[in-house]
Length: 123
Image (cartoon, rainbow, N blue to C red; front, side):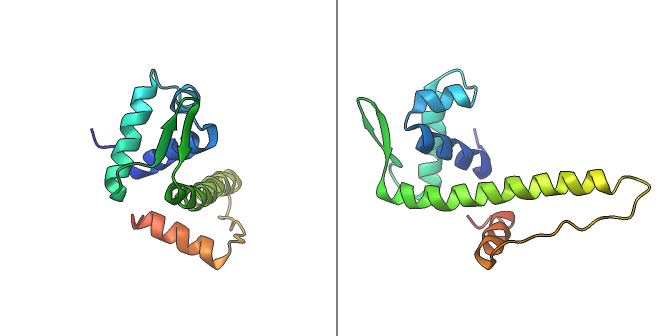
């Protein structure tokens, strides 16, 4: 079952934040931590690595490479969330009888590059 990368990265960020497949599964409303584990295996395969997390008795810890990935993916997901909120706000303001409004975007050049790469599927 192919899952889009955006969703895989979202799952990845939740596991990083909760340090647990089970807790991430609860938050993501999955029936089992096995689904989260399967999705992370799929992401690891896409990224060309064997693992993103080290398992231990109290949960999981991201590998050093996964920590770097998390920081960049979290930033990208936050930018996308903000962009969607700004779009909804602009859509509300520009109803059928109004001129389109421009939502001011104050993104750093690096953020613009992240969004552009994300949109082109270059992750």
